[in-house]
Length: 120
Image: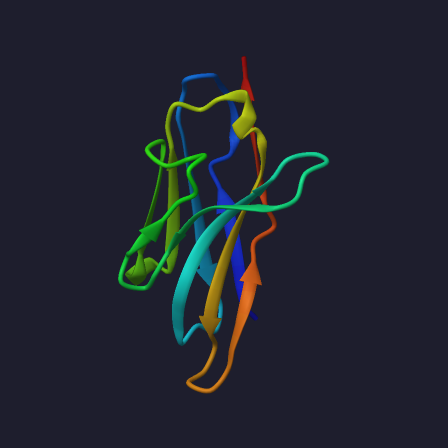
């Protein structure tokens, strides 16, 4: 059984920073791409950052220059450093991973989500 567990969400004032963590646990053979998504009330879930197994990162324009995704392969953990937060960043943030449980079996996994609220 594979689990992705996020932590680090909370309430922050506009202009502040938060760091999210997501740890994968269970029967893990290898983790390929990892990513962070977010979903605000009444809106579609959107990608905010993605990172390959070799740590090549990609961001949409909405967060480029403010958010940084990193990963620690030894700990099966991905991080999202969020700076210069605005109320528009308020959402539930989800961790996502393309993960192999054996040499022959891969699937896509989601965490349970962590709330980020930015006050003006």
